[in-house]
Image 1 (cartoon, each protein chain N blue to C red):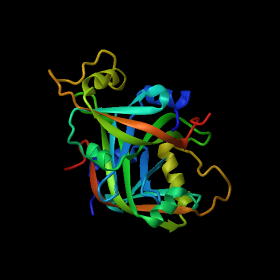
Image 2 (tube, each protein chain N blue to C red):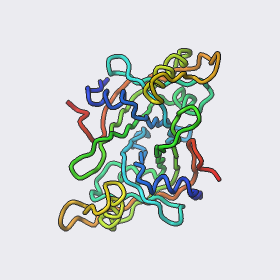
Image 3 (cartoon, each protein chain N blue to C red):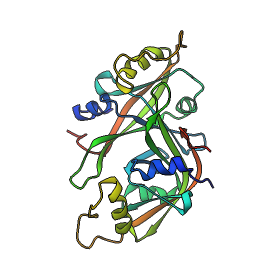
Length: 142
Length: 142
């Protein structure tokens, strides 16, 4: 179990996109870029999905190991951008996707966005990532 | 074998950062964010490393399967950003890192940058990624 520090939390909550890596059934890496929320006092990340048939959800149900990376807008002294890498164990729960997506859209699209952009969206699924290790390059270790 | 189309190539060559996923020895995903060049007429990606002891290089030598993802600045109609995912088989060659890093720094840091920022850098290593499949969300399939 690991917890995001203030700098890592601020990066994610500023609307940095999450590159979510899951493992295909042959063990090769699969990536999607998604919106991500910080939950459980910084010990968990959450993403929401309206469609439960997505490959990343099938992957997580088979192998819970995931890695999520985020680019920072800050750079080191020689101009290489900082980045945050979060390792975790994921699981998927049913329901709650429209509310979480709407909340995330206020940052990732802009204040006042109505999301999902449809009447009566399905309840969908939420991916929960319990953080096990934090890496990357940047001020992520206190 | 797959080849990047003009839109995918333009995204990478505009200085989009590459989230490079390799596989640790237990099969779990490892990510670093690196600079990436397009080579071999769009059929290969290349990254350069001064230090050959990096975990990602050890990983590639053991298991060549890699995935690289890039964020676009463009979004779809509902505000979700496009992203490019490149799957490939990687191998590492010795030498050539300072020249490639200098070239990439002109885009990733800025025109006129001297890189690596040291006298007499080591020859280093270049990772070559032969592209096998292209995915993501955006105008990457002609």
